[in-house]
Amino acid sequence: MSTIRYEFNGVKHPLADGKAAGMTQGLAISFLLRCGHWQLVDIKLITPNIQKALSFMLSDSIVSQKWGYKFIEEFYVPGTSILNGSIFTLYGLYDYCRESNDMNLFKIYIDDLKALLPRYRLLYWSYYDLGGTVASCFYHRLHIDMMEVLYKLTDDKIFLEYAQRWKKGLHYSCVFILIKAFQKCLNLKKMDMSFASKVC
Picture 1 (tube, rainbow, N blue to C red):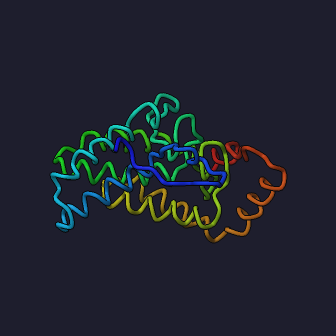
Picture 2: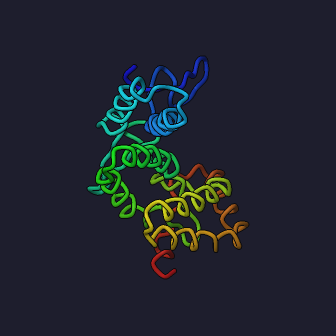
Picture 3: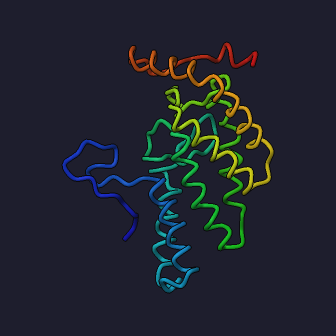
């Protein structure tokens, strides 16, 4: 087993036809490490699978370059750089680095995520991806939760600041739901609100 994959048969999906995902590898790494710690499996037996999943997750097939920063794609390269999917991969990378007692690799990718976060900011709301897709309420709340988790993992206040900023957007959720609806109705690829972001 070189990668861990979902099976999508007979449906249209980005991961159909045997494609693998970065998020899948990250979740699998976390799951396997926990199984090992809980002694459900022998950690020595699953270590090769963890290593293979990690190698693929950090390969050129999954890691893209965005403005000079590394980004682990939820699906595969080229991708639209979905925020929640990439953070799920970082959870797996965090668990792996903790197990290895070396957080340097995690720090490289978390620093690059920090550099890209302003591009996910839509006033007090968030973009779902770097393609300019406005996040739904579900994914916006998920982004808030993820920022809080990353703050707890890293103790870096930038994540807390994003969580607090995006929480304010929930008070105006109707406005952003309308913006998203407008985007979907017109099938716009990007809602460019950068002009307003500069003054907020």
